[in-house]
Amino acid sequence: MNTAVPAVADTESVTGPPRMHVPAGLLSVRELGRVASGGFFLYVFSTIATTLATMVLARAMNLGAFGLYSWVIATVQLLSVPAVLGIDRLLVRDIAVYMGESAYGAVRGLLRRSAELMVATCVVIGGATILVAWLSQGIDTTTATALTIGIVGLPLVAFTRLGQSALMGIHRVVVAQVADLAIRPAVLLIVVVVGAVAMAGRLDATTAVALYTASAAAGLLAVGYSMWRGLGQSLHPAAPSYETRRWMTAAFGLALLSGGALANGQIGVTLLGVFSTPEAAGLYAVAQRGAVTVAFPLFGLGAALAPTAARLWSAGRFTELQRLVTLGTRGVLLAALPIALVFVVFGGQILSLLFGPGFAAASTSLTLLTLSQVFNAATGSVQTLLIMTGRTRLTALGIAVGLGTNVVLGIVLIPVYHEIGAAIAAAASLLLTNAIHVVMARRFLGIDTTPFGLAVVKP
Image 1 (cartoon, rainbow, N blue to C red):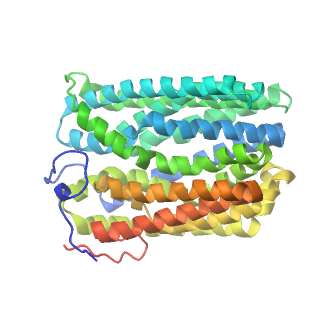
Image 2: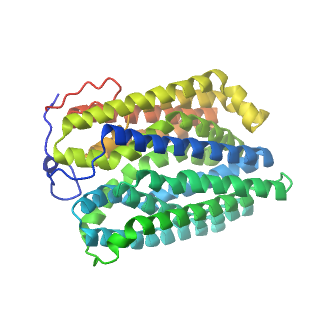
Image 3: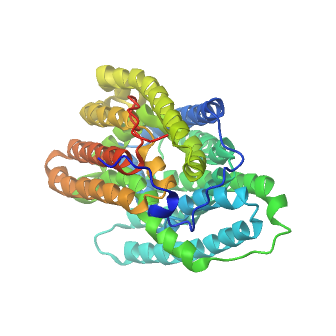
């Protein structure tokens, strides 16, 4: 095994030449824990609010309508991957470096180019999807209408991710997550409850999608205000400067990285809508929603670690980076295990209690997905670490293998086993991707992202 730790210039970094000075603003272990805790509690709030909204929808809609709603939202999220084109990851990494160098003009230019590109991609992708929906003979009017309303939310989702990434790049990690993890879920819960009451508990899929789109608009407004507060004074006097070719090359290289996990999360519902029934899509969506809560401590850690990992690696502080990664993974796993145990033992009862008796059938899918999320938590923020240290292509390879596994197994298993087939495909994909990334991190970075912290770095 290669135990050498190369400089950034020797990696596959797409962010330009190495910057080996020790930058200001690095997070200590205590600060990282504080930021990760803030992200953790935001994910707790988001999970509670979103779960409550899902419960209201599941009880106010029949299973077929709920499945159609879930399919439309999953499709919109899936389309946001090519719409964003990896710009979100690029912003976190490059803005962190630019701000450390007080290169405010470059930050302003990067934000402007990113916005211009996303407007173009949203118009092309959204317009093409709407045309297909209305011209295809295999799609009924109800589905086409719901999908059209959902597509209106595509630029809202894309620009919210842009704003979040910019805020993370300036170390406003918790603030960056407020819009998507607090504002949007809270608004979604409120409008869903109001809608269910107003329609006497008989919501249809089209109305439910419209309510979701309204919550996405609220999230975008919130992140826009946070960007104005966090970046406005620094960037306003600076004349924008551009490195368009390098940015676009980097963005395309990061597109799979930023979208792979999202695509993996949504592909099951999308394939169920194509190869199975709306009812199966609804069952799987609920099981997936529950299983993701097992790993939400990991999401908080990844958001906190990203800019710090980039700077520690650039500064050559490898031992400190290993320590932060190990402590973070241990904390995430300890938080994830009790949640997983409850879902494995009482999954069917929980689903029936929260969503209705018809959803108890998703218990097997919930168990499979939960166990895969435990493994996910045990591998730590390995993907974030690889990306922030410039191992872009290697990370993409692991994601591509996992995504391909998910799609192939889904196509084979879903027609026979329905939502359970989708769960098997998703679990296998997650296990394979994380195993590949852990091996890559040890071999090419000398960092062990598991709870064991078996460092191979050279001080």
